[in-house]
Structure formats: structure tokens, C-alpha cells
Image 1 (cartoon, helix red, strand yellow):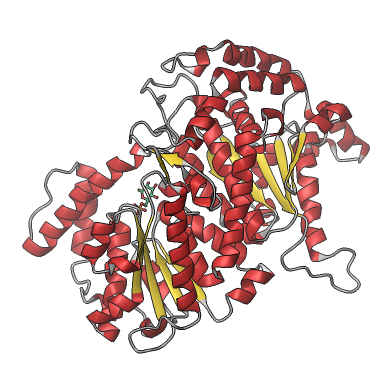
Image 2 (image 1 turned 180 degrees about the horizontal axis):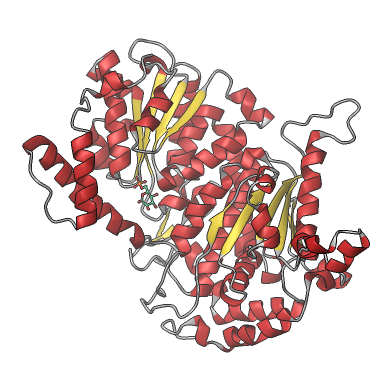
Length: 568
Ligand SMILES: O=P(O)(O)OC[C@H]1O[C@H](O)[C@H](O)[C@@H](O)[C@@H]1O
């Protein structure tokens, strides 16, 4: 297929469109009774099990999806990614986050150069630095060891590291290595987030890591200046060298900010922000908290999935299967949303991270060649850990709109509890729900079943569950650093597969620019109005009214920032 042709013009796409009518005649209740089908719709790899038998799909559907993958040149696109070609064409960049977790002896080329040695140079530097901080040989300005870390960053410089940190926090090995240490994340420019994050910390024992790919993000830079002020006010300006380090691709700006370039940890333009958790963006703060050896296991887990993604045939390829099923659900069955439902509290920040990876990657309206898409692409991702979500939004998923669900379960709990006299362990109780919910969605409950249970006639329609609601289940053997890396990479690649099929550029994010530039105009106006009393010009009636109200009612806000922050 020529690159400027839309995938919707392919025979494979049209065949799938026509096939929707066949699937509409089926019900998951019947599909699930076909044991051979169910057996075929399961894949295992490296301790993981994917069960996609509860998708509204037959073996014929899957075959047609593989044909779609061929029509979209999926394999070729995956190869181009791994080969370092500039597949992010609107920014003329390679997309090589897989190189961030490649083994030391691997070769991955970008612009004719093997990037793996550069990756390991930074990883070695992180290992060395984090060990010095952790063992107390790197001390703060007053000679005290730095036991607490505040990582400042937003978007891709925040969500991935927060997800991994939250997932590791209750892992026994990680707990041991984090003893006596704290890791916090300051993301929002809302000064409340500053206040929350420095409460209980002393500048004397705190290391601030400024994480920004561009080192120009307004929120991150203001937060960085705020914490620089917090450190300087307490310990003098020279303390900044000992208490602030940076992660960025823009080392000149790091230096300009006043951070010693020796204390800067680099990454590269071929790492997209939302794909950067395996670069110094995640590895530095996480190594400071848990030690490099724990974080290395996380990288190895991700690398295992990279190899699987690169070399497994489609029928056995977990990210490929997941990506194709997402395309099926979104573009053919018309399900715009996807719920990410980990039955693990440790994964509470997984859905927010995937929300950015998925929605910023695939929330596009034109093809990679700039042609408006005549079909739906992108997914609305949301989610909460089970069972909490069950007591919140599952009502809509069971009886309201159809939302394909990802159920993610863990065999061995990080924190097992089994009380004497209880029927099951606490983890079994949690997992009972993980096993039950997909069937409740698939099978539903018919009026006939309800009548047999003597449900009064006026309640029959209210208590009926239509069923036929798709889900898939991913079972992880445990939730250690390695498994967390696996899970991350599965979703990263799944999202890339979706974009490759839809024929979009999943690696740019022009849609975030307009709001940023409008905020610049507002910032200028706020400054002019506050400092020179200038009237509001150039905004519409709505914005002018709102800004006027805001300026008038907040004219007495004190400007002496440090006194507003909580006293330590
Ligand atoms: O890492 P930074 O350059 O500070 O960027 C932080 C974030 O801001 C941008 O607006 C992008 O939408 C994100 O993809 C990015 O992760």
C-alpha cells in the first residue's frame, strides 16, 4: 500500500467492516462455550498470560485483523522503529525508547551510530551517583546525608516514574532498599503542590531532581525556581550545587539555570517524553530511592517484552494482539473508551500513566501524511484499581455504555495476608473479583434467569444484564520490578501498534501547543495589569470578564512566596 493511502481504503479494512455484521449476530455467552476458540485466544510469554477469549471476536475476526496488520505494513513499521528510522516524521526524529533498556552488548542504531554505549554511560553515571547519595558519601551543604528526593517534572517527566514508584513502594525487595528514604513528585504548578511536597522535608537533607526533556516547560521551571529559592533561603545560594541535579536533553539550559552540568543526566531527542520512564527521567529518581539494582530489573522486564514484540509472530505477540484488538473495538465496533482495571493497589498510577501514553500518542485527527482520518482513532483511557472501581463506575460498564475492559491481575501478592478463620486470604478475596467481573460482563443475566429466581416482574428490566461486553485479562506472576517493566512495555508497544495500523504519527503531540501559547498571552496580560495597572486588551468578552474578576479579587495576595509555604 502506498504510504499516502489510508488504511480504510484497503481490502482488509473493508473486509473487517463487512465482518461486523457477523459478529453482531454472536453473543459472548455462545462464543465462550466454544472451548477450542477460547484455547486459541490465550497467549503466554515469560510468565505472563493474556486471555482475550472475552473479546467480541471469532477466529475469523483474528485472521482478518492479521490481514489488516499486513495491509498496514505493521511488521515493517515495527522494524523501522527498532532500526532507528525517523518514524516521528513531523519532528524528524527516531523513536528508540527500546534502546533505553537494551543490554550493554546490544546494537541499536540512530543516524548510523550505535546509541547503546551512550545509554549505558548515563546508566553507569546514575548508578555511581545514586550509590554515593544513598551511602552518604554525597552530602548536602551542611554535611548531612540527603535522604529525601523531590522529583520536579510534569507529563512524561512525571507520570511514568510515579507509576513505577507507586508499584515498587510495597514490593518487599524495594521496601528494604528504600529504608529511611522518601521520594516525592512535584508536578503541578499549583503552589498547593509545592506546599504538599515540601511539608515535613528539610532543605538540608533534600535532593531536588529537575526532570524536563526540553527544560523549558513553564510549570516545571517555575517549580524548579521555587524549590531553588526554598534551598537558597535556608542554606545560601551555593547550596544549590549540592542539592539540585537535573535530567534533560537540553544541557545548555540546565547550566544556565545554575545546575552544575556534571550533575546533569542526559537523554536524547529519540526518547519521547511519554516513553521516557526507562531513561534517566525514571531511572535517576527511582535509583535514588530503591538502588540501581532494583531499577535494572525493571529495565530487564521491559527489555524482555521488547524482544518478544520484535521477534514473535503476530499470533503469539502480546502487544500486537492487544493493539489489533483495540483497533477492532474502536474503529469497527465503535467503542471509544477503554477501562484499565488493575486488581492491585500497587498499580493505582498505571491508568493515569497509560492515559498519557495512549491519548497523547494516538489522539490524532490526521494520518501521518496529514490526511484527515475518515475513521475513529485513539482511545479514551481511564481506570482505577479493582475492587475500588466496582463500587464506583462499573455500573455504567455493566448496564450502561459498552466499554472494553483490561483486567490486570497478579498471582502472588506483594503483601499477602491470610487471617485465621477467614474463608480465603485477602488476596484471594481481591482475585475472586478479578475472575468474576469478566464473566459478569460477558454473560450478563437474562430475564428468564431472573424469573426463575422469582424476581418481581417490575424489576426484571432493571436487573437484566445484557452481557456481551468485551474484556481481556492479563495475569502477571507477581509484581516485582521485572514484572512492572514487562507491563509498561506491553502497553507502550500496544499503543504503537494501534498507531501503526491507524496510519498516524503516535510520537508527536502538536495538540498540546495551542493552549500553551494562549497561556503565554494571558501571563503577559496578568503581569501588565498587576504591575502597570494596564487594562485587559485582546481577549473575548468571556475571558476578559473572568480575568477582571480574578485580578480584582486577588490584588492583595502577598508576593513573598517562601512565607506562604509551610514552615518546616
Ligand atoms: O519533559 P518536558 O520537556 O518538561 O515536557 C513535559 C511534558 O510537556 C509537554 O506538554 C508534552 O505534552 C508532554 O509530552 C511532555 O512530557
